[in-house]
Image (cartoon, rainbow, N blue to C red; front, side):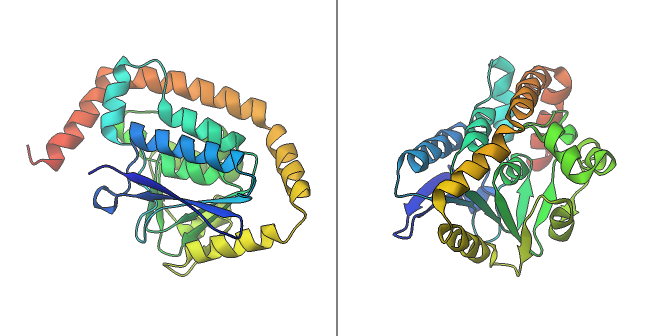
Length: 251
């Protein structure tokens, strides 16, 4: 079953992009990224859209990139997931994420590149890249050490240690936590507060914040893209992914 990205515009100036395929934990594939990129372009071009919210389903934000995508990247020279994250990082309007259940891998990158992020109390977070002999993407190797500190980032990235919503809030990955099932409500409340402020000033301030680190973020994304492509071509990564599928299918 394919993951669906639905875009809904509201009369109050808010647009919601929803990631939906709960049967497969909202994993993202090439088609999903194309839809997300299109949704960002639509939200940017539409003057009636002033705030963007990205969310998942009730019990899952996203389990990240489809492992089949990593298999296919062995023959690729670019990574569509990173193209999406570049577009999200450059998105000029306020962007808010609302996460419930789980946020894995690229899901955490989405949270990093949104201006605000909210998560349900029991939401779990993990960056399992090295578990599959892969390397991180989305400027995570730059931004996570800045947020969490190098030692905590090493634990999350090298050992794939899972962490809680409370811990995500403490390091600044989340703006705040909410009772389970109410992260999206918090995102809408944040959007309403943004809409009550002078809008051009918001855009100018976001641009200044983004531009201050844009060069470093772009360079990190470039490095990570090349590293991931090399990893995906490696026997180590291909074998790790094959082993995962074999265990899942009981072989």
